[in-house]
Length: 556
Image (tube, rainbow, N blue to C red; front, side):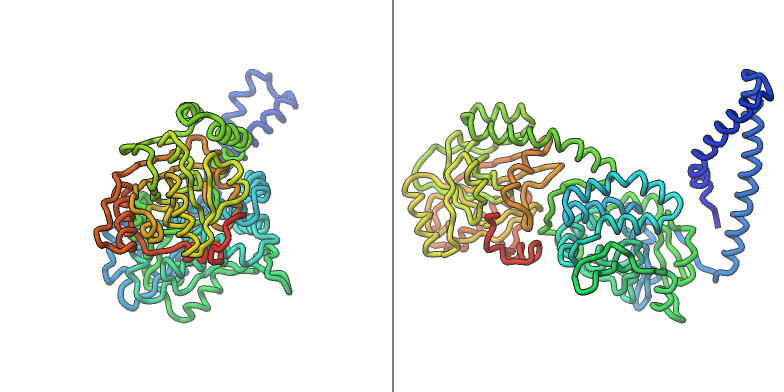
């Protein structure tokens, strides 16, 4: 067994430096030698003493490690590379059991702070997230001594007082996306090739990981610490139950052993999983550099929620909180630019304020009866379309907050979700002029298009498809479970949001096609331009997954 000497040296380096400084001050204070002559000799003396002491310590640690290894059964040890993870019968094949680390093996990072930050921010709010960030230096120092204590401290700050339902919603709507984006390809291939028991070991609390591992990776057992729940209430206390990975693995395997174990490079010296496995694979640098591509997800990631658009590492989270005092007045000024200035001037001033507009296609002249059918990315779609056309285009919506209605620079008309009444409303608006409509009925962040309602094809003959795409790096401008009045503000708080509008050529007359066929044709044309994938999913399915309701009222 090779001890991590570099890690040992890095951990004692600050203490070594502090020891040298204190010893120098002590000797100089006693006046043993003149100050100028004492320093070089003193440094040599201290360095020799420290080197001799460290060598003795390392030899003891090394001998201790080898003695422990001699007590273990023999295991075959391999480096996990793309060829080794090809899914052969010897690597988690038919009937074999596989045990795997989650942090650092399946996930590309062993740092769990970003995932706790996501739960704290999305489930507990910005103040809880700020508290967790302020405690990070203390948590980092504590992790150098005892990692388990760090996990307990982060769990208490993150989960104390949160309801079990809120945590499950965050896990389902927010954490799943970030887990998928940080999975490693080769360990996931080995896990998928295993047809026997799939066991994943993690240090994160069970409510954060179990649902994802079972739903997306088909894991059969999860070894994870439990969160305590207050008696008579479905709220977490923040305390982790007493947990022993060794006892949990002993209960799972009893007299048997796993055929294959996949370890993180950080835990490659860990004897525990070696005790319960016959063969060990350690993720190497080549495996660590390959992320799981989107087309290899076991199920497509179409819907996700949450405000944060970035992976909240400590540095990224600190930068975000430092940006917020600047972002709020910036967003207000951008709103004023769009509501007060003429369209030509608004585009110019908005671009100077950091908003990047990209307009494409041929802009049609104004005429009555034209319906612009847009895919839906944010509530600002009709506003940006009006700016692109250099004229106000009214819009119909399925749900809009009162705040958004008040600040909207274009007229908005609310639909009643009644097919007959809504059709009459749209016909009345088209008789007066142009109209913008989003047939999806709700927004979608990922490169997918939801089912287009055929209602617009039933009432309009002159249909102009419009492809819309947005990009942000700080906060998402949409939400399913949050406050919708904040959607435009959060989008405009981004340092450099991108809005792309492609006005396509008008659709040909229906020519005997049904409204559903026309709606599908519009969906396909927009998907081809954007490079998106068409789906048959609806607004109801989105809200059931992300908010636990059918999305009947989005006017918060």
